[in-house]
Image (cartoon, rainbow, N blue to C red; front, side):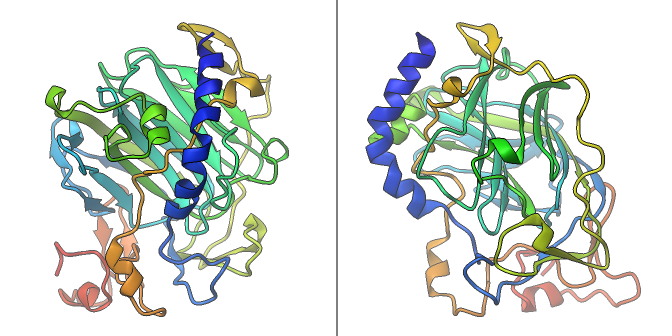
Length: 366
């Protein structure tokens, strides 16, 4: 009954969502439609980031705060959308995040991997229900259908920290909760929408149930949001990221958007070590809190919200074509330590103005 209700809601809201979702999916520079996009800064290694203090591997928006519980993303009023975006990209890899979802009807906690050409792999938690989480993916920003999402039992996600994992290779994507696989996806199962280009990490909280949002968005987020019941806070304690590829920069060799076209500067593209090829994992969803086998019909209820948190700064529309004043990345020659600290070239003098002159988002260095 629950999944049927979701399906009906999805169909009812599709008319509201089709145009706004497509219009607000955002990238600073899409290398499939332009040939002058900057290269992507490559992580090229494994980092373990403790969010008890701010990490300079990430650009912050909306003022996340930090303490012994990690980074806090608080939604207290209409328009709040605190978030962090990594300054580097990975090209296949494994990401583990310790996260506590925000409560509250209409509140959405999001953990997103997204590429410049809008390939995407997600976790999303709806504050109205602390017993489940949604997994999702998109290829090249195509949002014309909403059949990619799945719901998974995830009790207590607002009560304490739980480890969520995404393992992404050229052969498959694996979503895990507490080390248990809840979903897999292969290219053959993706209807030509398999994510396969260099991705940033984006994490944040926002109000899908804000009364100003489209009716379909509010319905999907199980709102409306009552801000008098807040503030509503999501927390991220730690993040471990393993980039399966190596090098300092990833570039698009052509405009095909295939992983084989991605090139590495100073390293190599690795499709991802050893895919999970043992016994098929126990992939589960849930109805009324009880695990059931995952089937395509269970995914048909997902609708991508029209007011997605990763939207453009309105000032970007006035930026000249060859300038990317808000383009995240590392200056040439800079690297990342094992703890996520951004390090200048060891043999070059440190210039306090160098990042500023290149308009990188390193305001704390300037």
